[in-house]
Image 1: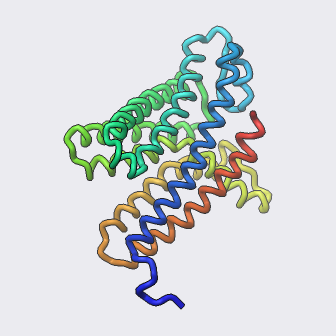
Image 2: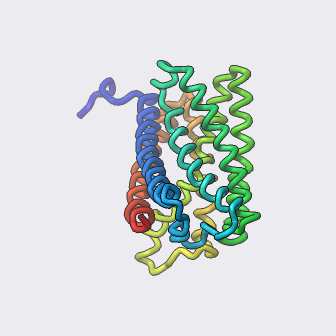
Image 3: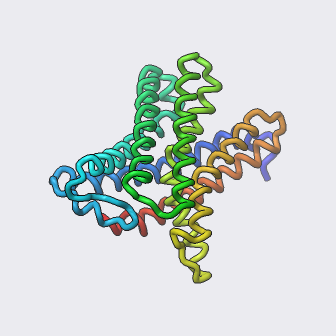
Length: 267
């Protein structure tokens, strides 16, 4: 039996849980980036965008709609870039050893996040890539928060208020990945509901809950993580660290399911 001295310190439990979740999330996010590159890369390089219509419920390639097609392809490819760039910002060694690279990558992340959000608004409200009123509202609120926290993160960085910048940047990071959270959320919810004979309908309650949860739940977990960091109570840190380990397992499972059932079959 381990002695009290050999047990992990509460701050270490919290940081290890955060690291475990980050590793699981990076695996899932970069798998999503790989899907974007493979799905869009071939048609774009080949000059034939018609294969991009393979995914339902999305207004893809429309003959003659030059502006809309550019917005669609640009939005997707830039989403892959911002997802890839965002993960590097959370690596402590990068910030310590190459602070200039961290700053420039951060500028790329925040700038592209704003562009992707604005093009997303265009695709939903002008081009008509919609899944329903509730989904449209969720996407719009998510996008609005991305703009708010990206600008706040940028402002606090310019003021050299590192603590505030970190909080806003982490919120922006989670919000930018809302589309990825939505996909793994659908997979996890589907795995739970499938044995009950319940299918996820894009206008049904399960999808609506997952849609709003794809950005509300990560923000709530981050708020709890910030609270645990500040709390002097060791129990709070241990509970939060353990919860992050469990969330890491769920994140890895949802990502694996998305690869197997959502992304790979379309390629």
